[in-house]
Length: 636
Image 1 (cartoon, rainbow, N blue to C red):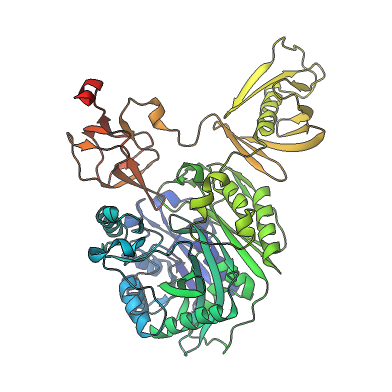
Image 2: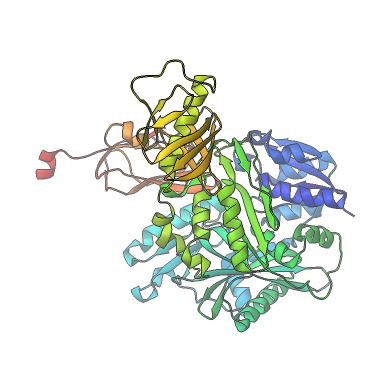
């Protein structure tokens, strides 16, 4: 019997495991890096052990320190969560060698599935359908487009789409370098890239007594940078024959490696055909949608299986539909740039069938070292249409104040006609991102409300104004200029927006009559240059400057500046004096577990190069200088 579990992870997944442990009467132990000293998962645990340092390589990826922490805190089991060491067979062996219970699959199964190339060989032998691999050195135009993938690890790292044969050598080198940096293994393989394919997966649960459950399908096709954003169960639009193929293939895959515990078998679906992609030997981020549909607790089953319990012969029957959205601190309109800063509020209105798994709460700080996931919102309902509508409604009404997030994108995605109709594929954001990130139509009225709320706060009272200025006052929020004038009775007239009339004004709430319709705007100003305005159906983040301003706007021509805080993970093979082309990648920055390319701002000569792998840089740090040729040089 397990009495105390250390979760070798952080934030949302650590809290998720702790919740089940508390329900089962099991003690909890957290580990934390220095930036997480006051994190929510640390505050919730019965005990917590510090991992000195900040970088994941010094903390959450140090299996020796985590095993030592478990022993010091008196834990008798370790749950890896997802990411970090969750699919590290060496860590699993170290846990069991220390006399602790490993809440996960056997290390041999992890080893077998850790390499995608070896896994595909095993799956072929087990009769699981596969895409035919392509030798990059022998690829021809007929093989395009190609998908390059890291053999070890996942999460979109070391993955590239190649549509031009001439670009293959460079992309192969880049994918190899990224894979080696992320996973310590530079092996990369190639396979055909299926246009408009769907990412469909099957949750499996297996015990040590020979029973394997296939717990339905999940569609995870809406992705950015090959990382999932919205997931749902069951996957819509699959006929019975294809579902049976997916279930049978997933069970065959699990049996082929002697799998025990919770895992996920991922497939690429094209038309009525399914092809094995990989098996994730851990709990998935999107596991709550399966829990909702099957009315079970996967973490509890992980714990029971680790204790030796047997599963019933058949799983429970599914019911209804569930959809999950991942709320990230990132700006989709700026190439998904990660965002940092204080999280002032994260409140989701309660509702039947709604679930929130959050790793951050009001007062927490979102830093640069770890994943940008703030929370997951899940809606469950009898039908897909109801679940999608319920989730979009909850997201639209949520109060999310602090760094820029993808919340508006999530709402727009859930309400997009293609998503509503179930027309899903992995190219969804490539086609629709500009429209999905267009400015909200209600921003001008939100700016009026913010200006009037600020004016009310500055007046110091809500009675009549003693001195009414002869000229209107002006406030600017983003691209919106608001001109207003206080009146002697304590009200306001709005001169810049004649269709908006102030009905009621206080520091935190403004009611506007807009073309005969009265709407209430809740206004929150935290003194950081950003004002958050919420309405019952939409939310607005108004600021005079973006969270990460474009440093190029205030730099000398040709300066290559860090667009965000992060760590230089690699640099191009160029030096001072070399010629570079406009848009040529020169530096790769890692922030929040995502890699971002920083490219040459213009064609010219590299006259300075300050980027060094491993160095941490702040936003606006000078990385390089490219000097453009003069008109005379160009003429020559």
